[in-house]
Length: 81
Image 1 (cartoon, rainbow, N blue to C red):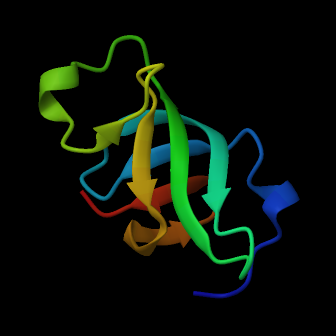
Image 2: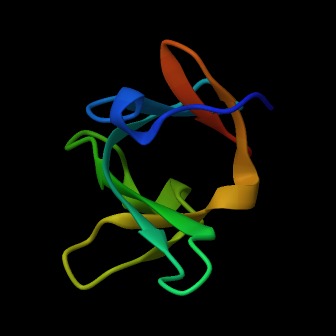
């Protein structure tokens, strides 16, 4: 995958590889010392049924998706489900 500036990710919608709209990118977690990206933090859509999502969540109910599941960044951030 080609390089993408973090500022271009702000406010992007996140979609599963199965076409499910998961929500909006809220934040990205990193390893401070190395700068390695860890997780996308996604604010879920209100109408998304939680029982169909297999990602870990944080204390606020946001999805934590490992960065290695990102498949494409265009109009949406596409992640492997």
